[in-house]
Structures are given as structure tokens and as C-alpha cells.
Amino acid sequence: MNIKKILLSIILILGFNTSSNSQVPSYLPKNGLLSWWPFSGNANDGSGNGCNGIVNEATLTTDRFGNINSAYSFNGTSSYIEANVKNYPLKGEARTISGWYKANNPILSKEYDFCLLNYGNISDPINWFKISFYRKGYLDIQFNSNIYSSQENYFNGNWTFFTFVFDDTNNTYSLYINNVYKLGGSGYLYTNGIDNLFRIGRNKLNNYFEGSIDDIGIWNRALTPQEISALYNNSLGVNEFKQNTTISIYPNPTTNVLNFKSNANMINSDYTIYDQSGKIMKIGKITHENTSIQLNNLPNGIYLLNVENIKQTFKVLKE
Image 1: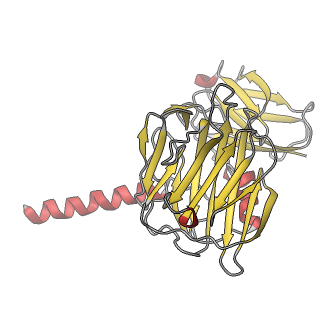
Image 2: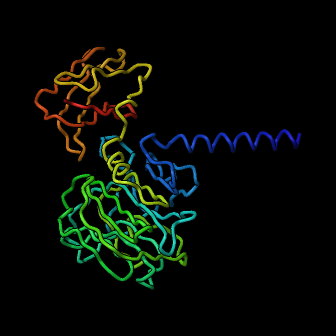
Image 3: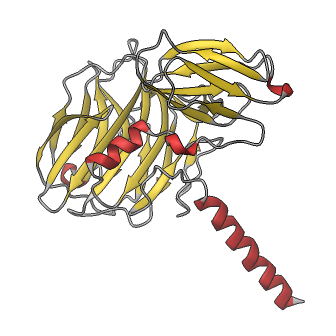
């Protein structure tokens, strides 16, 4: 009986680990992935490495695709998430940190620093890494006692993609915003493990972030520009439009008309089309089992189609 219990426990553990790994979408680089928090209903680590986040007063909210309970909202005064990231790069080791945020303008706050995320020994600025916003909305990077600023206002209420890369082969850093290189240079990034907690939305000086955050990922290597572009452009790859047992979209790519095929229980469901920044471009309703969606008024590009009550977002290429 004891042997059976042990075997059953092993099976359950293996099944759980398999489920965790299956959360990672195909466009997300697996090589060197330490943690990935998709914030889909909770702050669990979707990488399969078990670095689950502890939520402190942050609340689930709608993500950039309109999916409910798929991102976290931070109130700017007391909410944050923290996690113990296993094998986080220390000293001068390579790393990449990426994710999405929507920053509110904290016009009533007297603070001058609003922390997006941070890691390391806060009592020693040389060993501390931080990404935060200056009061003017500038996105700043701080490490090795230096502050590097984007000099652009990102307190605009729009979903924004960021990626920070440190390459230890030549000791260079880079910051990308919405897949565009914004700043970089030479520098030495040193962090130690005195404080192992990776904090999202707050630092230990109680500088809090106000807005929404989603899809935070950490790698122990420098992602390439091509990988960063894939992260930005491929919430779902063009070839990953799952032919759900009840749903299909075609043609894709398309020129003017996108056909949405479903079964009868989808009739009267609302749909929303977003551009890559999260801006709503078109709203409509599924009226038939075969509904034609007119895209002729949209410029050529990549769009995201979200349908009410479906936990899936379809990527659409208009040519």
C-alpha cells in the first residue's frame, strides 16, 4: 500500500510539472528562461521552475487583449508582488527582463520615483538593480550607482512593452520600448544575493507603481533582437491559431475581410480588435455561425482579435 501511495505521489508531481511547463507559449524563448509570470488568474510561475509570486494587495485586472483576470493592477501606495527567483543572475552575469505595463499618471502623488521592478541589495546601490519611472514619466534603469533615463513620458495609460538586456560578453546594456531600441551603452551590472526577492511594483524604500503589469519574464542570458521582436509581435504566432473545436478564422493573412466560423452558442458574443499597443481598433458582434469582419478601414499590420468568453486571442495579419 505504501509503495502504491509513493507511486501515486510521483505521478501527481510529474503531472503537475508537465502542466506548468505547458503554460509557456511557443514564441517565448525557453533557453535560459528562469521565471515567467503570465498573471492568468494568479501570480504563479508559468516557466515550470516554481518561482511563484506572493501577491500583496495587487488585484487581478483586464490584460491588453481584454481578457479579464489576466494581469495585475497596482494601486501606487501598498500593492506589490514578490518572488524568490531561483538561480537569478548575480555579479556580472548576463540577463534579460521583459514584460508589459500600463502606467497611470500619479498626479496626486508627492513621490518622484515609481518602481516597476527591482532586485538586489538596496542598502548598497552598486549591488542593486531597478527599473522605475521618474515623476515626468521617464522610464529609468538604475544599477552600479548610475541612472539611465529614457527621457520620454510613458505615463500615457497605454500598454507598453519593455525589455532590458545585459550582455556579459562585452558588458553592454540595452533598453527596448515597444520593440524599439531606446538607450544603451557600456556598464557593469553587479547584483548579489543578500536579498533574493524579485519585487514587482515596489522597492524596499516603499516607492510603489500605479497601473497594470503583465507577462514578466526573466532569462539568464541576453536575448537577441530577433527574440525580442518575436516577444513583442507574437502574442500568438500566425501558425498558432488553434483550430478550436468550435472556432476558426480565415483567410489569415487577409486583405479586407476576416471570416469567423463558430457554432451557434457563440452568436451574439462581442469581439474586439486591438493593435499591438493595445489600442482598440474595432468592436463588433458575432451575428452568425459564419461572420464576416470587415478590415478594409484598418491599415496593414498585425492585429489581435479577442472574442468574449473565449480565453484565447487570435493574431491577424492584414496585408
